[in-house]
Every structure is written in structure tokens, then in C-alpha cells.
Amino acid sequence: MPSASHVFHRSSRATPPRAVSGQGVYLIDETGKRYLDGSGGAAVSCLGHSDADVIAAIRDQTETLAFAHTGFFTSEPAERLADRLIAHAPEGIEKVYFVSGGSEAVETALKMARQYFIEIGQPGRTRFIARRQSYHGNTLGALSAGGNAWRKAPFAPLMAESHHIAPCYAYRGQEPGESLEEYGLRVANELEAELLRLGPDTVIGFIAETVAGATLGAVPAVPGYFKRIREICDRYGILLILDEVMCGMGRTGTLFACEQDGVSPDIVTIAKGLGAGYQPIGATLCSGAIHDAFAEGSGFFQHGHTYIGHATACAAADVVVGKLTDGGLTARAAEMGAKLDAALRDRFGQHPHIGDIRGRGMFRGLEIVADRDTRRPFAPEKGVNKAIKAAAFEAGLICYPMGGTIDGREGDHVLLAPPFILTDDELGELVDKLDTAFAQVI
Ligand code: PLP
Image 1 (tube, helix red, strand yellow):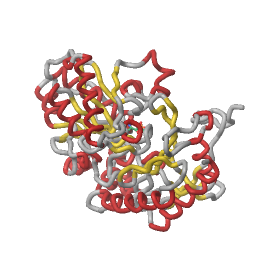
Image 2 (tube, rainbow, N blue to C red):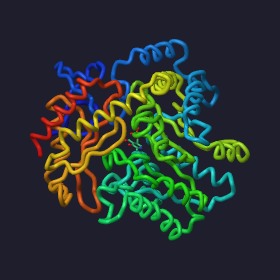
Image 3 (tube, protein in one colour):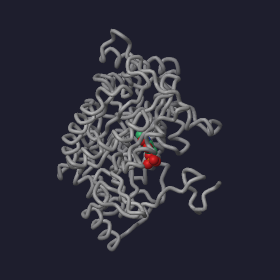
Image 4 (cartoon, protein in one colour):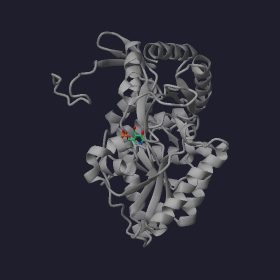
């Protein structure tokens, strides 16, 4: 039966409970039931749901100037936020293009990269390389770049050309006897092989999440992987685009996740935690060299959306980023993330169906397996990740379980991305409720 609601919900058969308020790390529904937001929605709510400073900034900005179209004006909050982001950005990153969310940020990155090569007289570069099982957003360009076969399948006739190499996913990819570094080099070298196969002069760039989020479940790259990727990009003159829509903005314990990999991208996308859920905002940051090519070339990026650089969204994000940096919340994400990791290992380290516990900072993943020794996943028909999500929700915990195709097979994982303001007691509650959900399903 179709839902009676006039909202076109994700499920056309069911109307979800109505969320009516947020308090700290909790969301409260119309019946008064409280849910601990263990995944910040989808790694969004880094400050929890009732941050008085962000709310005040939104109120003040709306009263002063809610919106001024960027075809005519810049605004004080947009300039301030860009200054703040650039002060903390990876080396070489000098400009910020504001958008309204993650898919727009990736879409912008792809178009910026393409136009960059037109500006410098290399229009023959038309292709992107990404990784299998990756997700970079649901708009057609971002979806085309991604490597998640299930999400792309219905829209295959509309997809732009892209090519995929293996993800850096040691739990599933490392060969017996191979060190992590050797594994990282082997999978990074797939980029070089693919470039040579395609013809390096036809490729625009390589896009990857610094820490793979939704599709793999908080999987950081192994040491050395991104350094080798950076070398290959430089050698063949292609751009390195890091998608930090999910893993950026302090989530992994540094403002930009790539700081921990010792690499600087040419373009980096951010969203989710940037607005912390208070305003829809994302951004595409690029190197000075890319911006110079536009400035010295056509002088105009042939792109744009109505709400880019939205003054109220920028004012909210400026307070968020101020709290993450000067306010010390990113350091807190590192500290509480280490406690969360320890608590997960303590509780589930010997669980017969938890094969791997991983992640960085407040970005943690647990891989669910039928057999720990062989790492065999559960059969997809069992719907293990969906059942865990439902059991956790019933227990009053929001977590982000997903399944994805792993080397041609299905697998299940649970992603945790709680607000950085989580207290020790709330951390204990999160682990207890996850345990309750696991006990019902695995
Ligand atoms: N890139 C990554 C890595 C994501 O995880 C997501 C969303 O989950 C996106 C892009 C798309 O962001 P949005 O849903 O804000 O459009």
C-alpha cells in the first residue's frame, strides 16, 4: 500500500516516524521516544542537534542579510568562512567554491577539473578514474564517477564515461604474506596501469574518498597508499580529487582527513559536517594553480547554482568551523574517537560475527561476517545490515548499517559517526544499544 503522506519518502510504502526536536546528541520523535544519534544522521551532525551558537548565528544573519545572489554580490559570511577554511586547508589549496551539499560539491569538482584542462589547452582530457564500490553523490555526474554498481544500474544509459580501479581495502584485498605497505603500493599502482591503458593524456583526474565511508564502512587507506597515488597523478599530469564530503571537517580527528595521509590534493570536496545539519552547505576547494588557470584563461567558471555562497548557510558554517578549529572540537573528535575505538574493541573484539573494527576519530566501522576465520559475509538474502538498523532504531540508537558488493559478493557493515560532543556516559549508552541490536540479529 502506498503511504498516505504527500511527501515522496525514500520508501514509497512507509512513512517514517516524525522527528520533532533535537537535544544534544539525541533526536526525539512525536511519541517522545529519544534516539541517540550514533551516526550523526549520515556523518552530518558533528555538533549535536541544539548548538546555541550556530542557532544564534543563523538568526542574526537572517535578520541582517539572509541571501544575496552571487551573480551580483559576495557577502561577509562567505568571505569569512573561506578565509577560515583556507587557513586550515591542505598545502596549496587557496580557493573555495561554495555549494549546497555533497553531490553538488563533487559535481563542481568534476566540472572544475574538466574546464581547468580546457583553460590550459588540453581539451583532449575527458575521463575520470575512480575506485570500485565508491560513492560520490547521486547527481548524474557524481554518480557516473562513483563505482557503486547497484546505485548506478537503473541510470546506466545516462552515465558519463568513468573507469575504476580497486579500492584500498586491506581487510578484503591484502594477500597472505603481503605487508600493508606492499598491499597499498600494489593497489595504488593500479592507477598507473589504468592510465597507461586509457592513454594518460585522455584522463582528467582520479577521485577517491580519503577514508571510504558509506560504501565500505570507515576504511582508511593503508600507509603510503595516497603518497603513491599523488606521485602517479603528478607523473602523468592528472588531478587528484579527494572527496571528504563524509570524512572531512574534523570527523577523523583532523580538519581535513588527508592531513593524516601526508598528501595534498588539487581539489577537495567537503559538505555534511561543514553545516553540521544546521544549514545545507558544501564546498569545493581547489589549488591556487587551478584558479590561476581560470584567471589567466577565460576568466569565468562555466558553472553555478542559485544558492552558492548562501549568506545564512555560510554564517552557520563559519561558527561550525570555528568550533572545530579554535574551539578544539576536532581534537575532541580524536580523543573521543580513540575511546570509542577502545570501547568497540572491548565489547565486540571477540564477537564471532564482527570481522573487523576500523576507522579514525569519530568515524568507525564494524564489518559483519558469517565466519570470522574465512571472512565469509552473510548471504545478502538475510538482509543483516537492514535488520541491525531496524533493531538499533527500536532500541533508540541511530546507526548507519550498509551492505555493498565486496569483490563480487555481498557484505555488511555498520558505520558509526557520532557528534563530537558525545560524553563518556553517552558513549557507553551507544555501545550498549549496539550490543542489544547485534544480540537480536547476529
Ligand atoms: N560524497 C560522499 C563521500 C558521500 O558520502 C556523499 C553522501 O553520502 C556524497 C558525496 C553526496 O553528498 P550529498 O548527499 O550531500 O549530496
